[in-house]
Length: 326
Image 1 (tube, one colour):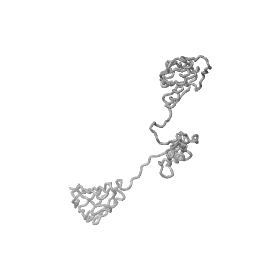
Image 2 (tube, rainbow, N blue to C red; image 1 turned 60 degrees about the vertical axis):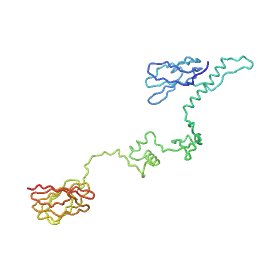
Image 3 (cartoon, rainbow, N blue to C red; image 1 turned 120 degrees about the vertical axis):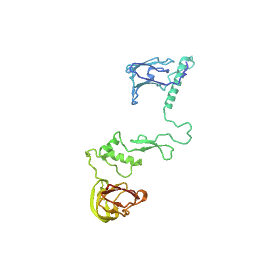
Image 4 (tube, rainbow, N blue to C red; image 1 turned 90 degrees about the vertical axis):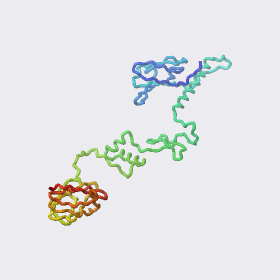
């Protein structure tokens, strides 16, 4: 018989019930099979043992044989059957004897099977593409057994070389922070991030895992909160917003000029005027100029009280007034 199939392995999903699995390919001895149970979720492989975990029938049949498991592979497991024909030749032909056609054909079949095994191994290996034309040495470096290192392409892109990595270990990354920024794991992580260009400077802020954190009220600066300020004044009036954003002024005479200091862009500031006197002369503050609605500066006359609101900007402050008097 001829061998018309190149199949050298088969696999089947477990269901917890099925125990008999067809090989799908010819083999000559029950010991020429390799049987593996693979856990699908992890890829973990468990090599099975003949007679202990499975039995084999159908050796030598052109259609292949059957592997019968002692315990059915479970759902979530895959049974893999691989043909492993020995790389030996056992046919001894005697000189001047009849040529045994069956023995000769069997040996030819074995040679084809060996070729198929090599083809299967080649198909599952790392290879250069057919169109690759550059010179590249695929030989592994002599120091390939260097601990905590990886295989990398050399600077000339002509061969492989070994590159030593900073040893992090399975838990190095979390440990580097959980240990408060000290110890080997922390040092290794710092060195690795520096080598990768991901760390600027010489240190990483340590995680203070052992210190309890208490929420506290963060203080606001003076111009961020309401702090009433009162004054009785007239003439050239200077208002300082360094200690709060609200000022009450009782006028004892006309306010002939107004200067506002310590306003920051983005802030809102209020002045409440009272007293039956006028307010004129809105000068520039220590940074910006004032803009009135309609670009017309108002002369305020207070009967009861007038509220002036200033929106501080980067170059201009917007000012408006509301009279609550009779």
